[in-house]
Amino acid sequence: MKTLAQALQALAALAVLVAAVPVTLNQWAAREARQEAASRAALHASLAQEAAKAGDPALAAQAWSDALALDPGNADYRAGLLTAHVDAVLNDAGVINADPLRLHAEFADAVTRDASPPARLLVAFGRVLQYRGQGEQARARFAQAAKAQPDLADAHLYLGDAALKEGKLDEASVALGRALELDPRLTLAKFALGQVRLLQKRTDEALKLLREAAQAIPNGKVWLALGRALVDKESWVEAEKALERALGLDKTLVLAHALLAEAYVRNGKLEAAVGALRLAYERAGDLEAYRKLGRLLAGTRQPGDALAVWGEIRSLFPEDVEAHCQIGANAVGAGQLEVARAALEKCLSLGADKPDLAKMVDSARQELQRVNAMVAKLQAEQAREEQAQKGGKR
Image 1: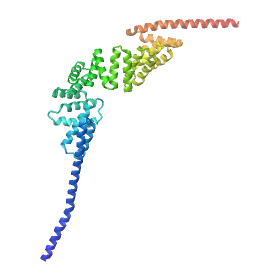
Image 2: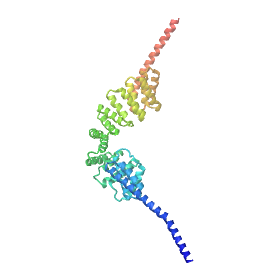
Image 3: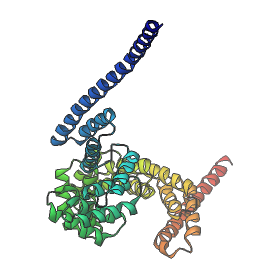
Image 4: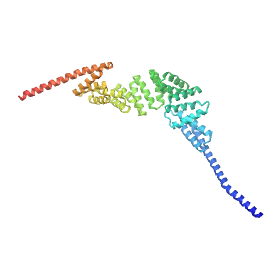
């Protein structure tokens, strides 16, 4: 019996040992997987560091993200990803290519956790806020960054740009001027300050800044701003070239068409001006450009085309005084006297109590008198012809 008991105990121990083997093997496999993941994560982290040194924050961010996916608890990798995202946002002068909602959450969390967040992080956070339409909060972050690190040019640049967007030109001028003091090569600051000077009617200063910016940045908006400054300066040949360059770089800049049309007119290129004004209306819905088109067509003795333009404007705005006046004047040129008389009478009726349109209404009154005289003459001639025909029959 004793021997049997000992045998049973030995068998039980063996069973426990055998059962424990899979657990031990599983633990070993899990440890091996973790080590392999950590090794692969380290390779991605190394790639991220190299990308950051090479000035490619987008690649660095992707590599840090891959490293974190393999080693989610690694604080160094998370910090590296945050830095890469900050660099990417600050390096991108236009749109923010990464997911702004995700960046917002990441930056907000980092700022909240740090009692004294880095100024560059604050600027990047401000840019994301600005991109998401939260201008007031963005400006507060830019101001916080400028206070935290007064020698950071980007903080003053974006603080000035935010002030410009709010129409606070004096504040924008100070901040952007400071940005250029810190970094005279900061092209975006020249572009923004050039726009401030343009709005302040300091055209010569605006031209200097915008010319420098345009030479450095192949960007349609910069060339459009330069074109505006040249139009203000009445440098029409240069304005034409700048505005054509703007549209060549960015065909979505619909506001450039009306300015370019004015330059074409001043440079004697009337056919090109007609095309530009049509585009200004078709692409930007610029009604004033369409009015200019109607006036230009009338001035170049194209009454039929002018009638079509003013007829469309009248259909949109039936009480528009100028539309009726212009239809009346152009209908005369097209030989449509009854149309002319009806339109001119409507013009006088609508404009009678509008002192600011007195000159236009007076011209319409004189034109109506001329039309009535022409109609009376035609009626008299028609009556004589009819009389002559009756006499001949006798």
